[in-house]
Length: 471
Image (cartoon, rainbow, N blue to C red; front, side, top):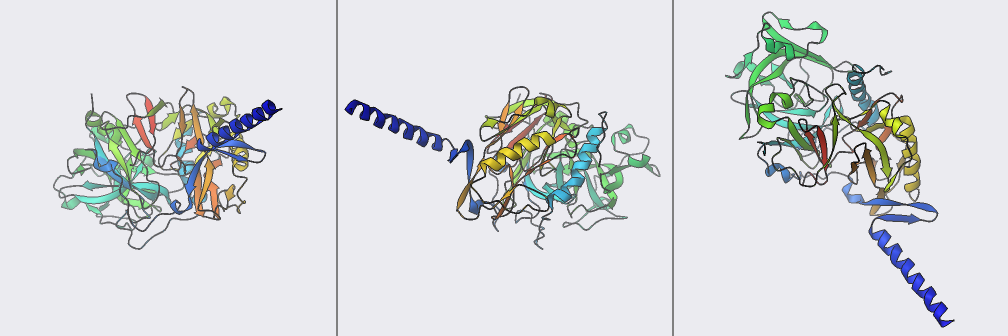
C-alpha cells in the first residue's frame, strides 16, 4: 500500500513538473480549451509614447535611412499632431485594389473591385494613400532639399512634388524647387531613358522634355518631368544622375508626405538603378509604433546572422512573391489545403497594413483564434475588423503565436503584436481579413512585418526574415 501511494505521489509530481515546463514554454491551458503557444504582451506597450525612441541598427550601418511613423514624435514636421484614421480597412481597400490590379495583369483572372557596400536609411511609419505606411527622409538636388517619401515595394518610380507646381497637394515640408538646383537636368523625350518611365494615358512628352505619369487605384495620380538629379541618402551615400519623377500635377490625397520611393523590381525603381552599387539587395525593419524608428538599408552590409530565407517568386508582376502554403496558430499548423494558397499566389507588401487571406484560410484562422482568445471578453466588432477582444482588465495579456509556412520548408513566426490591431485596450482585434474572392492574391501586410528585418535578395532569388531587426 505504501509503495502504491508513493507511486501516485511520484506520478503527481511528474505531471506537475510537466505542467510548469509547458507554461514556461508559452503554452496556455484553459479548462477544456486546447493548448497554444502564446506571446505575453504588456498592456502599457500597446500605445506610443510622446518621446521618439531611435533604432540602434540605423546607426550601425553605412547605407541606412531612418524609417519613421508619420503620426508620431519621430516625424518632426508632425507639429499639428495629425492622427491616423481609425477606419483602417475602408482606407486600406484602395491599396489592396492597387496591388490586386497590378497582379491581375499577369494572370487570367481579374479583381472584382563579397560583402556589398550598404546604404541604410531610417524608416518612419506614415500614411500613403491614407493607410499606415512608412517614411524615409532623403535629399534632392544641390544644395539638397530634404523631403520625406513613403517606402513602397509596390511602386516603381520614385517621385516627389516639385516647384513650380501646376497642381500640388499640401505637404509638411518644403517642396523641392528644380530651378534652384545646379545638378537638375531634364531628360529629352527622344532619349532612350524616357522609355523606362511610366506613361499612363500615353503621356510621354511635354514639348521636347520627357514626362512620366502614374495612376493608382481609386483615382490618385502623379505627373511631371522625368529627370536626373543628385540624391543624398546619407552623409556618405550620394547617388548622381538618379532618374526620378519631378511632379508638377498630383491628383488625390497623399496625406502630406512629399512623394514615394519605389522599391519594386522594375527598371526604374531605386533598387534597379543602384544595382551596380548595392547589387539589388535591400532590407527594412518597420517600427513597432509611431514613437519608434526603424530603418531601410541598401546592400548586404551587417545583415543579421539569424535570417530565415524563403524563395522569392518573380512571376507576380514586378512585386515580391512568396510560396505560402499554410498558417500556424499557437504552435500548430492549421488544417488548410495547400491548394487554397496556390490557387492565386502570395505577395509581401510594405504599404498594405492588414494581411489578406483566402476566404477558406481566414475561416480556419478565425475559428482557432477565437478559441485561443476565449478567456477574454469579446469586444464589439469595429467598422473594419470582426474579431475583437477586451484585454483591459489585467496589466498583461496573451495572444497565440502566429506562423507562416512556405513550400520550401521555411517556417516564419511573426512578432508578438504582428497579428493584432489595437483600437483601445478594450478593443484589440485580429489584424487579418478575408479576401473578397478565392482567386485574389494573399497579401502579407506590414503589421505582420513590424520589428522584423525583412531582406530582399533579388540576385539570390530569396526573401529573408529576422526577428528583433530594429534593435
